[in-house]
Length: 478
Image (cartoon, rainbow, N blue to C red; front, top):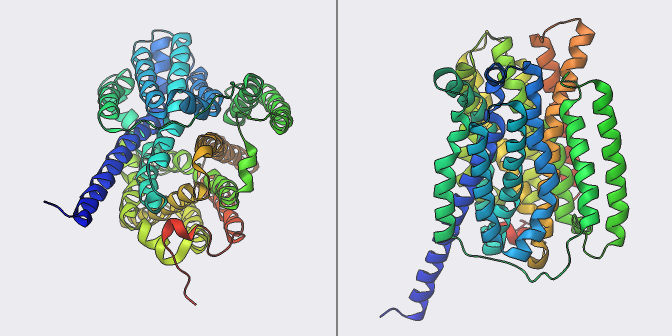
């Protein structure tokens, strides 16, 4: 017979094992979503030929997915509270998988766009609700470790996606880039049913339809404008008009949110200091880092003369660094605390991001790997710290609202990073008179996004040195 202490130890071990299983299931869903959002990029020329349309028109296959994310992410928190996070997460995986099946069977571009919107609906619910499942099941002391699991697929997906898409399109069929989601989705639904506990908070508040309409118009127009500006996908006037409408709708939502008792996106959460710092500094940092998957593969292919597969083997070093980080994140944050880690680690990560602009074909491959490996490690640690810090002070009853707001701003910041990188490339090419991007254009773009990432450091420094110590276990040494 086991005594009470032994029973408690066994129960605690079983609970930690269940949390890890839940984290792995959610991480796999995140990986599927992150890969899918980038794997299509390298297949667009082949798909354009299959649909008999101009390649430039295929950009709508990307923007339709992003617009669906922007429209439906804000509603994810209310849905999880009303119908249960596990149920919504399971349905989201099913919708995403069904959208993948339909995308793989599309015969025309309009069909593909409709099915990509369906995919985006599933993805919009899958990411924030999956994070919510963990936040409501995990004690604060385990928060850093769990967030490390979720950070890795977020960094690996955008790096693995383009070379994987190029490999599948070259040696198989573009339709397979969607079909690979089918077995992952089916297994994910089964695992969620078997291992994930349902969590929900009592929620009798009616759905904020006016707020939903304003946020949908604002976010979709802003995302569309940011995604298309500087890419020649649509006339510049269309992009600027979309941005203008988005700004007006966003202001309208802010006025509405101040008056509504339960707004869809609740900005009163910014009164929590750690959440405010994580949102502001994390958003700025992601804007800079979000340009990395866009700039680096293109630089290696256009100026180094590498193929998609060759560039993918080099850029994968960033993902390797992210995976190395996971076991040490908890120890680092326990030793240095959130503030010092975010300031000094963020500065080092920004420097390594800017150093990518100094890459030249004459550099030894080992040197490229070293910079990317170290950069991937530091960026992953930074994201893990921001994600854990964001929820350190949030009450359980407001977790769903926090995940909706945090996920929405996260999606905007990553899109903004790509848009700033594309706009910087366009400006530098125009100033230098380059009809196609050259190495100097990429170098300057890397410097610009690195400076943006570096600006997150003073924002992080503004919070107390002992902020959220109960999450990390850090104790300041006198």
